Image 1 (tube, rainbow, N blue to C red):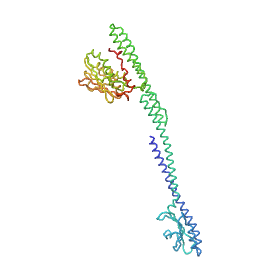
Image 2: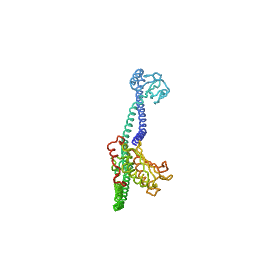
Image 3: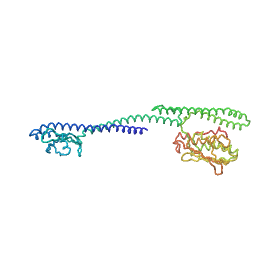
Image 4: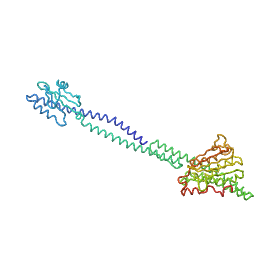
Length: 462
């Protein structure tokens, strides 16, 4: 924008100045010609007056020659006198038609074919015919001083263009600065900083955009706050039925069964509390710390958690993942990754008959990690792609959305297909963790991977 404003200003100023200064230059040139012609005419008339008296005397030719010689000098117009008999006093001159016309008593000026200008004045009162005074001007003498005026006009034009560019640059800087500040605020809002606000500056249009951007930020902040509070309120309502479950568990006669169910209820309480804390947590809270988790460790851990239930239902649950010494770091927080793996395994329990086995495979890739889960169930219906809030199995349809959101926020994706045996196959790709989470991990990233994802001691199945 700034460059475009400068180019537009330079072009417009140059056109305006050209429309003004070119006629002024031509006018100055014409004025110089008129001034030189008038000066030559005055010299010719003055010389003609003196020659009329001198040539009237008997010995007038010699004094006339002296008078003509005094009229010629360095940088002076070339002055000649053509006598009636064709004799020329002063610089050589030819008897042309213009000279013959002047002998009829007419004074005039004309432009010879060789350039310049000639002024002819007849000498009156001379016996024996009319003599003619001829004053010749060269082009240099005719246009003397026009070069200096042209340079002056060019300097004025250049100065005005530079002045216009300076003002245009300041204006462009103001416009570009206001636009860049608006873009910075928009980037901060896109990054999740809902406290970013634009200071209105610049022309009225940009001030209007800044005001509307601030209004949009306020609306987004209000909507997100209301959504977080609604989620927290809904999660809080679960506390009452959870408390009732705890009381029922405590009333069981079998101590082992009571302990197992109590552990399940405690895990459910922690999940509800985590939902409330997450819903009310500011959007950008905790972004400065490392966000990473070991996909292989989480997959093994959650498989061990679900294996007792799989054994109760006669299912085979196999987990193939790199060993503990070869982590698969991905850019997902531990609890979110654990929830995603739980959602994938839980879907198999919910939508396949008892006895249908499942297989989890973790593969480390150049851009992150990949988790593949296959089951021996009926698979997805032809052409059916699970969507949020839409499930063909009678559930809410939100489980797979947890997986999709975790994968996409890390830079990965989720793919749905069929396994070799016709069952469902889901491939979740997670983006690689932050820089430094490689084979030679930094201390912060290593600590991130070492943090327990989910406590096995208090989660349901023991």
